[in-house]
Length: 276
Image (cartoon, rainbow, N blue to C red):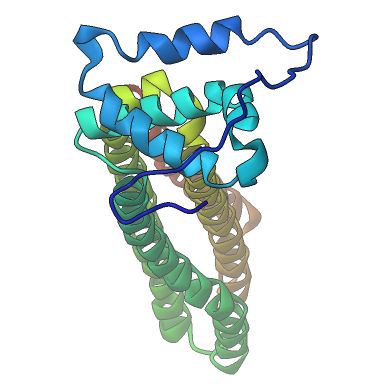
């Protein structure tokens, strides 16, 4: 028999009761099914009807009654889930659509940051090579060497500030993403049926992992770029004929500035984490 347009299902049965597996206790399933007919749960009945028809229509007609009784737990569970969706004015498809929009928005933002970082990383060895080549070309001109030294320091500061901006952007994205995620999953539906949020937790983990990965890239690039520029500054100072004491003082000053800058970045990161 098949499901009609009016949502009815024909069930054939014999006069004698079907034989059930004696090792299976059906009393609890039947009691849960009967509980759905309580006065306080009248709204649940239409969902119970739909779940019963959907489940029973999958069984062969000649075994439909027996298999339906054995599947009452599945019927009740399906009906209650759909009922909770109705109560919360939600549907799994709508939730997935909303979360796909959240996911796409944040993945696009992270991809944009990654693209900018990739360009900087690719340009780093080219910039270092060009600077060293320029030093060799102008090694006889102290004026141009001093100019190049200043340009190297200013470039380090400028790129460090850009990296700091990217780092703060990642913190902001992380904070807003977790807010959106928690808001979406605060619905009572997910408290009653926690298994339904597994997909969303997996996506959350992917975005969180990507944020951590990008932070690692930013920090690595920060140190590689600044340490490389310190060596370039040393190379220029040698060409300028600066004595060892002057070079050491310059190195200490640059390292101290870099460490302070990085510590400030870490402190801001911790403040954002504690505030989120």
